[in-house]
Amino acid sequence: MVMRLIKDKLAHVPHKPGSYQMKDLEGNIIYVGKAKDLKNRLSSYFTGSHDYKTTKMLTQVVDFDIIITASELEAFILELDLIKKHQPRYNILLTDDKSYPYIEITKEKHPKLVVTRRVKKKHRNLFGPYPNVKAARDTIQILNKLYPLRKCQKLPNEPCLYYHLGQCLAPCIHNVEQETYRAIESDIRAFLKGKITNVVKDLEQKMYQASDALAYERASEYKALIEAIKTTTKTKQAVNINDERPLDVIGVASEDSALALVIFFIRHGKITASDKRIYTVDHDQEQALSDFVAQFYRTYPTPQEIIMRDHPEKKTLESLLDVKLHVPQRGAKRNLLDLAEKNALETLKQEKASLKQKHAKTFGLLDELGELLDIKTPYRIEAFDNAHLFGTHPVSAKVVFQNAKPDKHAYRKYKLDDQGIQVGDTDQMKEVLYRRFRRLLMDQEQAPDLILLDGGIAQLNVAKALKAEFGLDIPLATLVKNDKHQTSNLLDEAGTTTEIKPNSELFRFLSRVQEEAHRFAITFHQKKRHQGLFASKLDDVKGVGPKTKQTLLKTYKTTENILNAPDEELKALGINEKTINNIKHTLKQS
Image 1 (cartoon, rainbow, N blue to C red):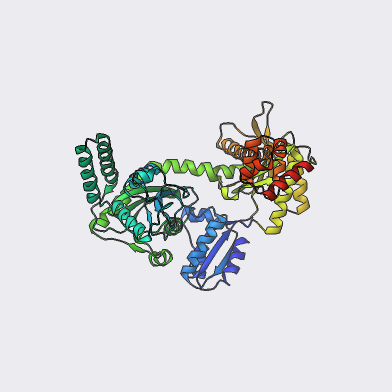
Image 2 (cartoon, rainbow, N blue to C red):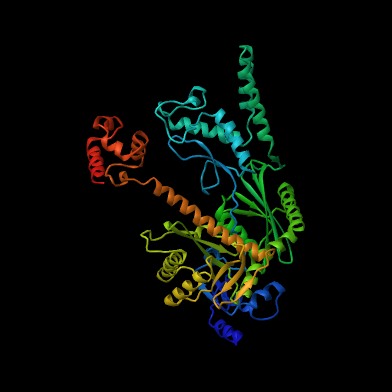
């Protein structure tokens, strides 16, 4: 029956480029693909035999959608956007929080050097990546001693110690021309390229001069700086390549459903950093590779050239990323590619077993959870928890786990009614779920596959009643504690209690979700309670901001002392007469 419906739908698919989305029985998108000919590509799925990976995916496909685009490139862009939005199970997903440290010369009137992970792809004065934060900070420490850019976050009113040490131009008191900064930036770029000969010679001369003047401590400082420069510039692995441009080399190795990738970041003829990744690929490995490259360079700065194996979508990737993909056949670059491929193969050998274990800890345990609750696999889980202190400052928090990993961008905090209307956790959960369900309907947000509660059957019953009112069909479950106040069972909507083995991966996962929701709620509650402790009648006074309030309370301790303070004293604190009158009037009223 399903195949007949699919074949009927295939008859109306055009021979045009676009993106297609495979759906399961629940209507969830489980795979997103692209094609320059949608009809041919989709027809290939549902005719003939396939390998195990594709067959496994197709057993869950009951429907598909298509979106026609003007070109193959537009189809690629659309595919990436849909993968990011829906995070389908059978696509390769660049969802980790990994980032690389870079050194940046900030785009300010008076620039400074900073270590950053928030990179802007087209930033001219961005250097790296570095293998770790320590390496980047050590390099900045040297640069700050050599080049007098500002060190302070905000310009002070007078020069600081760095100015007197000759390590800052003191733009706080001097007019520094932009040409001066451009010259310094040029010197920094040369230094980071490894051109240190002139710098070292200059420092050696200063060291000898200090020694001749019997300033041995200063001479020792110069010597230490010279050694630090030589050490820093030698920590990068030099490669025999006659190319100063930024290059990335991507090595690939695959076996069965495992895909390993190793990336060498080559800057100024040296390997400055490297990265390795390994994924489970339940479908076309070539498409998985192109998706990885496209997703990766949508996140990280694109070099001037990427060296990798030949790929069917090479031209499309070049257009998408605006970069040359080079497939060297011989020479130094070919040797680099071979080295990256060998490293990828070694990564595959070492981590294939751990990859299977990792896969079992994500999709495997989610499948198990779905079977226990008799629901579809809950790829997206929302968990709620409440926090309050004897009913005061009540808050709630929502955490989201996508594919068994925290999706922190989707976390939410809720300030709850603080008028004494609520009498316990059940009322608080009722309020927060009402707001959540209303948002799902009003804003048409992505609904979770499971809502996990923490308060036992009472909260579960509240959630069931609310869900029925809103006409939603979202599975609910709650974690139940034993007499030792330890989570031990899972209770579903039908009232079925299932014991969870305390040494199982599922138990550890559910405990992690529970602890994360509790942590997020408690942190928010502590912040709100802290704000409440420091609230005062001064908050209601027009013209009194946080700084003035802090000054007043620090000086007079209580609002009564402030009320009785002479106006001249208040004026001495920098408060004008109008604000003083407002303060006295408000405090008298209270």
